[in-house]
Image (cartoon, rainbow, N blue to C red; front, top):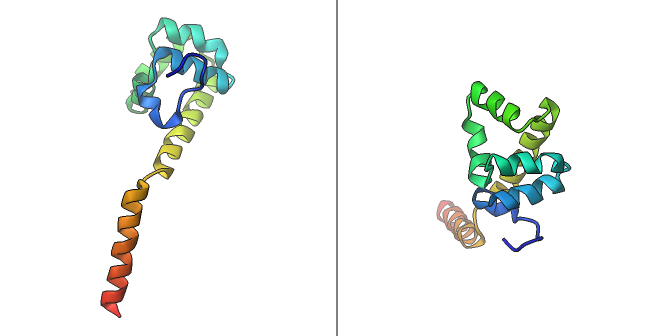
Length: 110
């Protein structure tokens, strides 16, 4: 990731702590940037939030001094990024192959 550039959403699971900080600024949660940096929150950590227990989530919120509403915003923005990643799937090369297969199946049935 280049310094000062926004992190690429499709690569969020490999974001550095600095990338996460830039993203927090973009989603208007920049006030938590220092707390996230102090706690080493990177993209891999953000990805793991989805499997955290309630106790782990509450511990994270306390450690980063987050308001509950801001945590919800964080989760919604993460979901938006993850959904965006899925929209890019399958890659063009596979999509083309699937399309050809579907056309071939249709011709076989006729």
